[in-house]
Amino acid sequence: MIVWADNKFAVSGALTIDSAKALQRFPFGQHAKGEPLVVDMAQVASVDSAAVSLMLSWLRQAKAQGLQLSFIHVPTNLHSLVDLYGLSDVLPLNYS
Image (cartoon, rainbow, N blue to C red; front, side, top):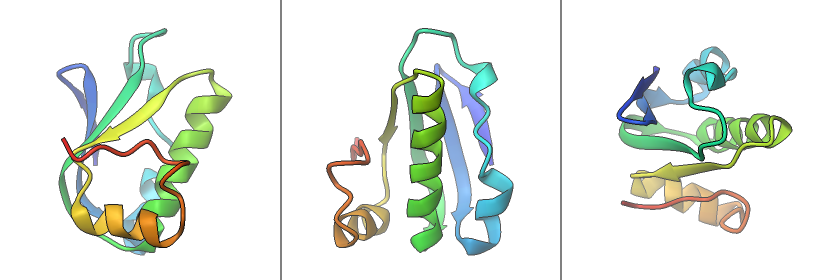
C-alpha cells in the first residue's frame, strides 16, 4: 500500500512478485508539484527482486513527469538486492 502522509509517500506491506503489479502505477497526483518526491519504506515487511523492478518503474515514471524521486528507510535486504544487481548508482536509496 502507498499513502501520502507527512509530505512523503509511505509504502507498507510486501513488495514482492505477488504485490508488484497492484503497486505499479505510482500516485503522483497527491504530491505538491515542484517538490522532490520522497518514498518512505520503513513499513515494508518483505521484498524480493520484484521490489527492485518496481522501484525502477517508479523512478522512470517520476523522470517522465520531470520529478525527482528518492527512497528513505530502505530495508537492508532491499539495499542488498540493489547492490547485487549493480543499481546503487541508479536508485537513490537512503537508510535513514
